[in-house]
Length: 601
Ligand code: DMJ
Image (cartoon, rainbow, N blue to C red; front, side, top):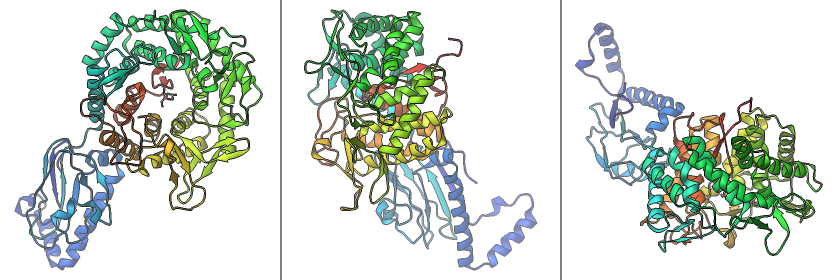
């Protein structure tokens, strides 16, 4: 019935056929044709409409087909024969109406006029022409046209644009400030470049990767009198170097990983063996922040994947010993609530402090993520990790889950001394992905149900905002007082280009193959392009996701935008399920894939 999928322009005609269709079985066809001619115009119209409708349903029930063709076809229903064509200019959106009424071509471009499927989809990659072919018997044409959008390619383009800014204004520095066209420094270690190495490799950006590799080889030095945060430098630098080593097999990256790993070790020289937050990597001296001897629970329990892998690769057990000791202590500590942990731990006593507040957001988030992922990394052989993870998920279900009004979105609130605060950090949106990963690895199926519900909520945190981008923190309505599920406080309206939602979308798509997750990710990428892309190169965090006219660029591109956000988007859209297989790799909390250990190691 229709031409091959890959054609740029395909026309499918469900109308009257002429002599060219008479070949074999001529007589049978002739009698069919006679019967067809005996039908009234209304009967013929109804039959043809029904057939077209069934065809559409068929196409949409095949995710791979509908994904290829999405946003690019229309059923036309008009009363008179007509030849029509209109251009679709690059950058405009094409609507996907199923038009059930007499219409004018103008309406095709105004999706708001269509009650049936008033949804905008996708940008054409290039200028195109849509030409509905209307045959004599009127209205019976289904038209398919325009190249399918290559979403993965759009992510590569976004990366190149971000890299253009970083190269021009921040090369070798920690972060790009794209508006002022300069750079920001945190540790002075080329953070964005190192965080982005494995992304370039995965996106097959060879030139960019080779140039960056040369910088690592020639310029990157850890012999620097500089204080670094143990957690941030572990997940971004150590994690980034280790994963790049695994992907490329180039020992340069392992040597650098050993160098930074050993320089971070003084952090563990504390009375309790719970590490300090900061280390001077040049002097080999570690210390807590000036105002406290506490460390953050998520920070001390989310460095394990990296140090354990460093021990395995170097055959030097000191790294693994240090981080396993932290987990051993946290496993036994008092002060948990149904498996949920407080946010702070003291480096002298080794005990939790500021007890009674429980969140899956900032300061606790990746504790839960790393329980599951360490268990997976080690080949499911460490039962305490699984035990703590399962208990924590039950703790979340029992204490933190609520539903919004009016839409009954399920969210994870925060418990503060027995009271539930209905707020959720965007950071919590890592959880659907982690729950799905657990369910994929044999953990209870209801983890997947919860993952799906939370994924919907994280999606709503984007779509309910005027820019289509999530705020840093959402407040949820439990009672229906203004008809909205999500409220945002003025101080929480910013968006830092964070990855957690697209990270979870990637897991959800890999495990369910449900194309809606790809569509949600695609909408997010388009919003990033619309509101955070800086013309001269780079993307910027913004101050107000509720103001599409002035989103308030903040002049900073975080390294995780390249390390995580664009990597997860690319993997979400990639059709190769073996590209970083989730049965072979486990992603650290900065999206750096590390291998799942073979059973004999
Ligand atoms: C990243 O550095 C990591 O994902 C971390 O676990 C949380 N914060 C940022 C991204 O939002």
